[in-house]
Image 1: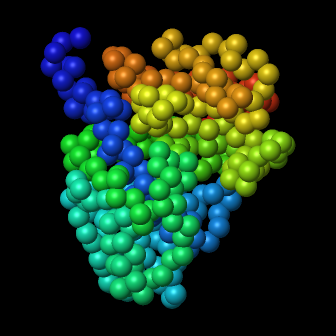
Image 2: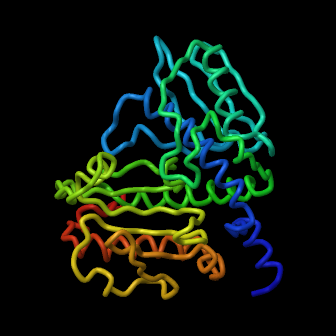
Length: 309
């Protein structure tokens, strides 16, 4: 591939090496958990935890509107101006800068001070959930990294992947989640449902019981963690049919990986970006994983497919 073509592609698909931004990723993850828990506690419940994630906006990540008193409010991470912004339906607003050296403890203090000035008083469990840190938010002065260049790469990838997932979502006519970002696992995800109830796994906790109360095929992308220390696209089916990992994935660079007693279909981000048309490679992976997993689980794939106008 010519150097110009490679440079043009990399300008669209940013480099995302986990080790280069792990401290910033860990801090941002905790910032998201604080705001996400506010939405969790204040937004009316929606099935399968759809009331807790963030959504990609033209500036960053937003909670969307959260009801309060006789109106609503919204909290947005602005990754263009690097600010945390609160706005209300009454026209009031507050914001503060997101910058290197802003600790989780200070973020927590500033956010709740601004909310109280706006007459909003959420009650959250102020401890991380399945994150790299276990320190209560008000006490965490260690996580304070905010590399603006890394955040820019993160946000550009987020916008790109969000758009690809929405295109993929449109191919399915059954019950589906929106494309949303979960703050507990720090991934962007999309889930399709068969419409049939699923058996509850023995030992499943509250979160899992609600999330997988129906048969699902899920898709997502994460920026890497200790288990898979590189960005990757994934898909899985619940409940998992026997022999699933014997099926051949397309494209050839995709593979199955054991996870939590089941299997993930994985496409590594760097492998996808190295192909001639990364967007089509990603869509091919998502479609192929769905076809394999849904057919193995006995879904009516034909009737769920979007018909031409």
